[in-house]
Structures are given as C-alpha cells and as structure tokens.
Image 1 (cartoon, rainbow, N blue to C red):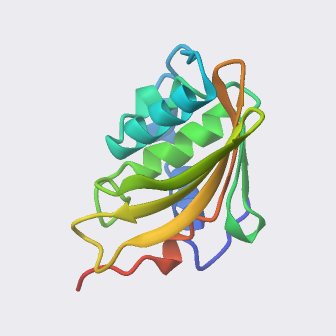
Image 2: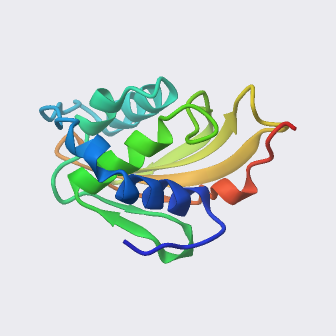
Image 3: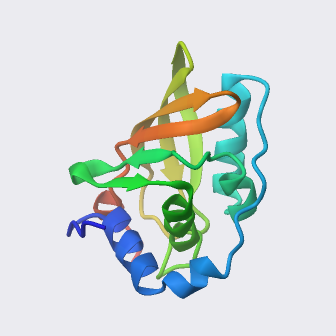
Amino acid sequence: MNRVTGTLAAAVIAFCAANAWAADAMKLPPLKKQPTVQKVIDEHLDALNKCDWNRLMAQYPDDVEIHLPDGVVVKGRAKVGDLFAGFCKARPDGLKGLKFTTESSFKVGNTLNVMWRAEADFLAEPYKGSDAYVTRDGLMAAQVTTFDGSKLKFKK
C-alpha cells in the first residue's frame, strides 16, 4: 500500500498495515444490501458516525474501491476493513467521535454526491468535504472522497 505523507488517511492505512493482525482477527460480516441508493448512504453515514465496523463492512462487496486524496486507492473488502478499523480507533490513533452531517446531496444514476460537514469534541472547528458514493445492487461499490485528515484542526 502506498504511503502518502500529510494525510491522516495515509497514516491510518500505514498503521493498519503495520498492525494487520488486529484486522485479521476481525471477521468480515455477511453483506447486507439496502433497498435504495439513499438507504445505502444513510446506513454508511450512521455506521460511520457510530464507528460500527460490522455495519460498515456489511456494505462493501469484495471488489470495492475507495479513492482518497493524493492518489491513494484502497482496493478490496479486507483492506477497506483495515482502513475503517484504524479510523474507528479512539484519539489520538483514530478519529472515533467524528460525526459527518450531510449539507447537500444530489443523485446521478446509482451515485449519490454528498457535501458534508464533520465535527467532533476534539476538533477546533468543523471540517467540510465531499464524497461520491457509487452503489451497486444495494451495496457500496466505490467511494471517491476529498477527506484529508491533515486539514483537520484539533483542539490544543
């Protein structure tokens, strides 16, 4: 996996790669399809906000890809599981407690484009970004995100 300095995403990926035993011990849950594009994204955001790893991973098929800033691409269900296992760790190792709120969205086919705001008790100010969530057959097939953890402003 490529290591890109300056982004928390890269740091989380590197942390997970170094501690792969932790994710290997986590058994991927069965897939759980949602009936609509909006429900796929609603389930994703609720599970992410609660750092519910099992619910997150129940959305991702084996061929999932998440495209992060700086050309980092996470491919496959197991590697996405590693990414979210790191993300859902408590601070300072992860970002558990970060809450994403949709500010606006629009659907194009099976893709929901979402402008969001992220807030947490440990942030000095809200952080804004956007994602394109590509769904297929009631699951999250791909995600393209502007999330760049190096832009988060933490309280001192």
